[in-house]
Length: 435
Ligand code: GLY
Ligand code: MN
Ligand code: MN
Image (cartoon, rainbow, N blue to C red):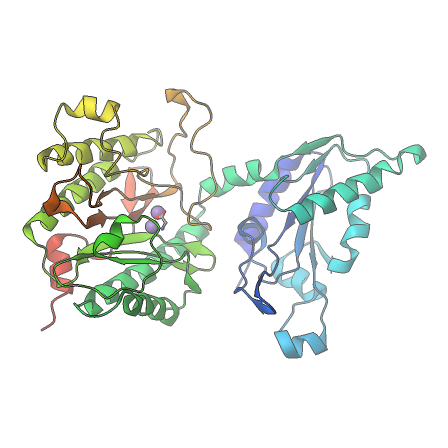
């Protein structure tokens, strides 16, 4: 394996630092209860720049005339490695991951003031991690303390994530390849869940089918807590209990995506527990599907981020009129946000190392200030309709919740949906046939 993409990204970032020093720590290990830890997940920014998998590691980039990339990481420790597994150690880490230099993490607090001395700026994101805010401040103070012997401390502190978010918004070829693979594994999980679904099995049974398929195909697991929501549970947007039996005649909503090499897929499918859509379920499903098609068709380079949400809103609002949930003129209903009781979320978000990925959506409060789509951006398209039991909703719709979510790459030609789990009513019913 080579780490050329990560080396290239560090060079790109170094070019933008000017006479400054950037500190990029990975995530700490976190206790779950007593001495048991949560499964370890690296920091996405650190991973983007290194693919170095160990905790207790920090990248330091020194910009300017003689740019330098340094990695601080754990030393080899034969005794600890018997308990916790392999550690690269600084020498091998520098060699394999392509850093100019790697040093023991224990030397960081001594090295940082030396690296910051007589530099213009520190690149650090305040508020991201209180531990590193304190450590960066201590390093600055250590330089300031030397002012009487002529050493100058950085006067400017800049937000490093602002630079990295811009870079992460446009996926490179390596990232797109990984995201396509994450999508294929996720599609396979959804297909398997559809195939295994029948009245009487429980939501957790299908969660387990997804988990099994994701791991079996090499993903590290779920990119976020999966939603496996039967019947009216689908109307709870962040339902994660996944512990109820599935009932014939109701719909099931599954929102699940795997994580592969750090990259997320994010896919939702809604389908009938018994394998056949009823008349009213079909009506609602076709409206959401048409809203998704309209939204995907609105994606192209040069379009403002908000345009595909507006395209979905128009179809969903017309659908609510057709279902006799709303009455009136569609433009007025959209202007008054009358759709909100049944469609209360946005139509999508950036996708990448984080399921709700880094990157600005808007630069100001004006209508002109939305991020303009460009090739290499990846986002989700996930319209839905949710009919909680309420006086405002016709009774025959109660308990129906439908969302359809796919992942889309912006290309020179438009939007390429690259997740492909069964989606048309015919394809879903065919996948669910048990004969
Ligand atoms: N799975 C989280 C989302 O769809 O945004
Ligand atoms: Mn989702
Ligand atoms: Mn999503």
